[in-house]
Length: 217
Ligand code: HEC
Ligand code: HEC
Image (cartoon, rainbow, N blue to C red; front, side):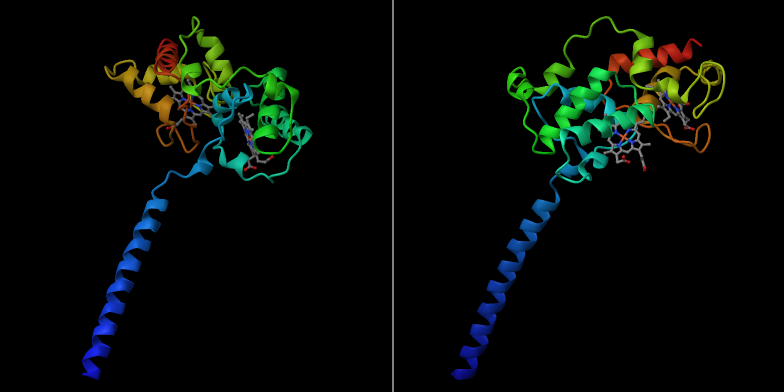
């Protein structure tokens, strides 16, 4: 019968449609579950990549870099990095500025450099970062991470004086682990409304050293 056939066709159509929808929903949810790449710096074999991972994350996420116009030249990128140093106090040596400028220009722009091809062969970044540390010096860590841009030993700046932190936690048996968590994750509200940035690129040993240093003030 005609009517039955139409119903069957319709049904089949609905079923196919449902399957199609399901497949698409699945595809959509699969692609949504991928980590957002924009939050990270693009990997590179250029030595500036490791320096940028360590130093540029001190104050803000890699989104700032990812949102820059795509065709910036070496000169523009180097000027941008230099600005982080001169205008905002980023702890960068002149060589850091040069290396990070080159890394950004070659990775985000289309600059080609002789040094890129001459750079050492690709090394897994993790291996390089966690390479057995040279004797870690607390003062060097404080300087390299701009801790002292926001903290002083005995007066309140953007963040609390380290002496005040030591005093508040002196009878707390959990002090060391609490401060390690604070340094790794950053935070706000324990001392005031200002925000402490997270320091996720530091190793556990480095964080412990810093926490111990603060508690000794
Ligand atoms: C000491 C803190 C600090 C460090 C370290 C730092 N920046 Fe910034 N950066 C800032 C501030 C502050 C701004 C301006 C934020 C705003 O205007 O909202 C900024 C903005 C930017 C912008 C957006 C464009 C602009 O000029 O405002 C880019 C790109 C950028 N930073 C790249 C970098 C790179 C690359 C590094 C690593 C070499 C870095 N930053 C390290 C503080 C820092
Ligand atoms: C951009 C400014 C800024 C930088 C850079 C910064 N801090 Fe802080 N820090 C703060 C602020 C603001 C607070 C108070 C946060 C709060 O009220 O919870 C704080 C709090 C702390 C505390 C106390 C945490 C607690 O649980 O009571 C310690 C310890 C500390 N910082 C250590 C460090 C070390 C070590 C570094 C460098 C690796 C560093 N800070 C870099 C702003 C900063």
